[in-house]
Image (tube, rainbow, N blue to C red; front, side, top):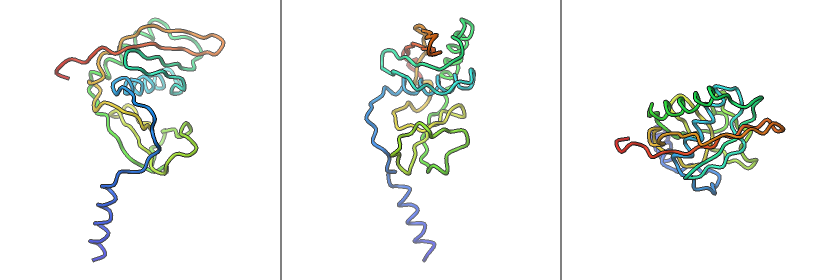
Length: 174
């Protein structure tokens, strides 16, 4: 009897929607997912932190990174090619609900608000990226579409490198 009751309680808990902090944005899922990929790519390739300054919109977006120097033409070409390779890889984008003590090693929580809920929502993009996020995302990377670099800016005083980009619609069979 105890085991059956415990299983029923567990099943009821799994069916309940976790209580998360309210989210006040309505992101465009392809662009927001592209932001995640670009952040992960920049961290892995150039050793910087995820961006703290992003303006993500449906038509075009811009993200800034703290770097020692601006990216070279070759490095920018690599970023564009790698972003499109990750999109074409059609990686699954999944959501997982965890508590702070269940967060995988390397996932930073220092940017979460002070009043963050006990349950955290982790967004995973294949094995490439995982981070806490309450935003809207596509279900697999091919839905992002083609990553197109629009331009860059370098702020020497702040050592801030801004990347401006847009997305071209994905192929019909994606």
